[in-house]
Image (tube, rainbow, N blue to C red; front, top):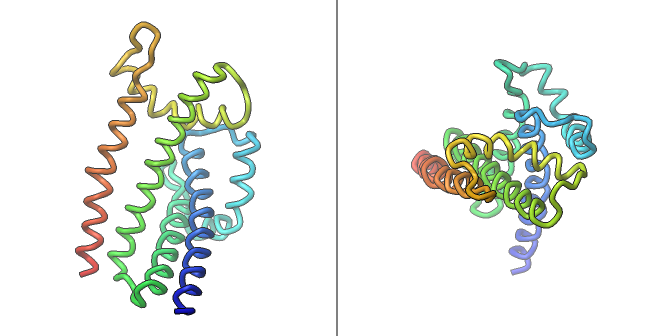
Length: 193
């Protein structure tokens, strides 16, 4: 029984450490993708925290077509390592390589979707509580949410001053979980056998 407590503690530490660092790398990738202000203190923190492994990867994996492939490789690799370690501790078994990659991509997509849901929700709350305020967090929230909200506003313009575009984006993000992430997760299970 003592071993299961130790295994649970190790599992928790591994999951927490990897989840936090993966979140930092994902946020860096998203902020790069939306071309957020790199002088923002939060952006600078993300750049500093994630630069060491990316510096090494960029020597081997160049960017292409405006996409930072080294960051994508780092995200998928970290997620795959986390899944491998947790599977090994929990079940004493490894995933197949194909299953591991597909499941890693599904986990990362889930994280990205939930980041956008959180960002838009907080952006809405801040616009109600303290509209027009300026601080580094609100600037990044705006920069992250606008690429999704802008097209939604074209499809669903505001009615009597009420912006309903976040509802449309929330529906789209939930459908992405159902129609994109779930099939990938099922494919990973099928590949695992």
